Image 1 (cartoon, rainbow, N blue to C red):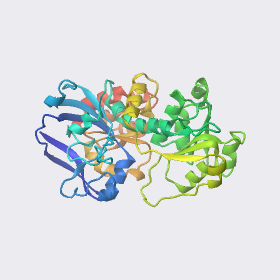
Image 2: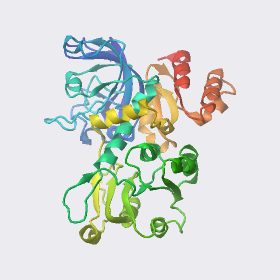
Image 3: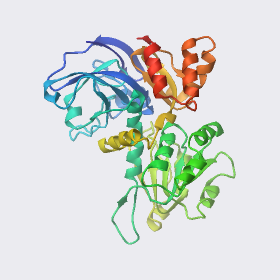
Image 4: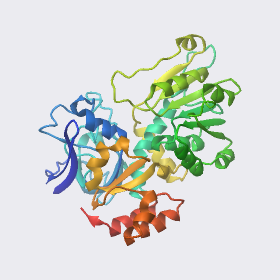
Amino acid sequence: MKTKAVRLYGKNDLRLDEFDLPEIKDDEILAQIVSDSICMSSYKAAIQGTDHKRVPKDIDVNPIIIGHEFCGTIIKVGKKWENQYKPGQKFSIQPALNQKDDPFAAPGYSFRYIGGCATHIIIPNVVMELGCLLPYEGEAFFYGSLAEPMSCIVGAFRANYHTAPGSYEHQMGVKIGGNMAILAGVGPMGLGAIDYALHNERKPKLLVVTDINEERLARAASIYTVEDAAKEGIQLVYVNTSSPDKGVDYLMSLTNGKGYDDVFVFAPVKQVIEMGDQILGYDGCLNFFAGPSDSKFSANFNFYNVHYNATHIVGTSGGNTEDMKISLEMMGKGLINPVSMITHVGGLNSAVQTTLNLPNIPGGKKLIYTNIEMELTAIADFREKGKTDPFFAKLADIVEQNNGLWCAEAEKYLLASSKPI
């Protein structure tokens, strides 16, 4: 079977190729991808090439397919797995395979025939063996794509820990009824973290979200409102820390000087990390969520507080399969709705330039539908484009009825009305 896929050959060398997939083996599965959301991690892999931990050294002759936040439909199942998976079944994948002999290997980084930026893929045996091919029963494919980034957030919240005075036992997870801060927290992943903080079982009593962009803060506040947070028993405060009077002292005043039990840093910026360190309370846990591209990236950390105030730091890179299952279950129950992450939609033809220019494209998640041809377009621009194109006019009508957010109805219309690639 022929497939079209975005493949990585070296640093900044992404190409949209058409090529033949081999016949599947008895322990493999043939699948069609429908949606893939583009992650900053894919951008980092693209610019770092073989310097990236997950990317093989021989991609110049054996290029890999990028994309790891994908959802699709199974087409054909090898004999080994035909009792567990069926043709026509929807699926999502946990790309963090965490193999003992190759802990960095992951779909979207390391494999020739599996990755999200493709029309069709071959799912290798190891994915099923490790329980990372997850059945998905949702109506819309894009939710399956968002399950992976949400699993990273779930994992981060689970990785934080605290200790009782006089005890060395780690109590895993964010502190229930504590003070929480999400710094640089209104990008796509920050929005997902706000959603999860408001609706998971381990809720804080105070949630402070910071950024330096008033427009982004206003959008976040319109989606996750102070009033809705109050219904969950949470005091939600949005703070623009670019204002001189809204720095560390102001953030500390919101806790009456106690400080924060859990601080999440959503940007690899030295000043943001150091602000997070300065606002930690006793036994406070700082989670460095945003992965830097610079392998020598560092920031100052107060070790007086480490010694006397039991402050500590953790870092998470992706979630695990359990985190993925939690995110899928919560989405299925309507407890979280990460659609606020998505700000742009496009077809496979737009994936190369979108990935390579990702830091320069404003907004949140860029959602790619891999079997259609469509230039990457901001949802906010649908109405303007609709003045000359009835296709975008209809999309604008649909999303405006959904608070300006992407939705299942919009996806259904897009897939039925777009030009195949």
